[in-house]
Image (cartoon, rainbow, N blue to C red; front, side, top):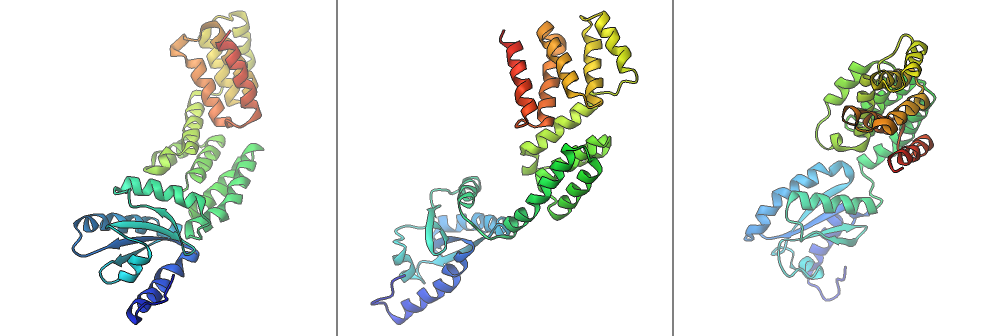
Length: 303
């Protein structure tokens, strides 16, 4: 910041600003709130900014309030013409004008967008970097059906980050894969707030629904023979698909569900299609098997 021609008092303001704002902004995002004691809108906005700063503190966000009457040199440097004026500063640079956002929702939305673009060094970001490889290990263990190892890994991550939706969902899916369906249900039912909206949690709920629907069948070969003898018996075919899913035969289950959809897609309010979509969610939308089976579904639906 320029200091040429400034008074000693102005220089002191700028030096304080350098220590309170510029230096912390090298690693943190500083929300700069220009305000005054006589400004009614400033007083209304202040508690909202303070709450957001507290909520985002672990993400490397801090709030600095600048009284424009006591810091005229700073206000002039930032060309503040009206208050409240709210800026976001990172590494000494103004990176966003947050002034138009006057509600908590609008400020949070803007702040989330800013944080995605900057290499902020907060506790949350450090923790995410630490658990990312652990999540990959848990998913790998699930893929090779080492469910006990997967559950142990995801449980460790949940201990580290209790509100991480990917970790919670991974633990739930591991419990389901290990037959501990009630434990998974309890885990998922305890989720509230933002994590509940995460796609990973939706995937875990699909796995739970599928596990409850896919009942093990004692005599799969006998049931298959009944279906072969009476191909139009949709109840028996649906039961067989569930038994195959419970046995881990997703190809066999998909074959029967696709046959049902081709025969009568409206049977039982579209139960066969709904079951197949749950299976897609559980396997993972990016999985090659899902892509191939989804193409088969499209061929059935649009021919």
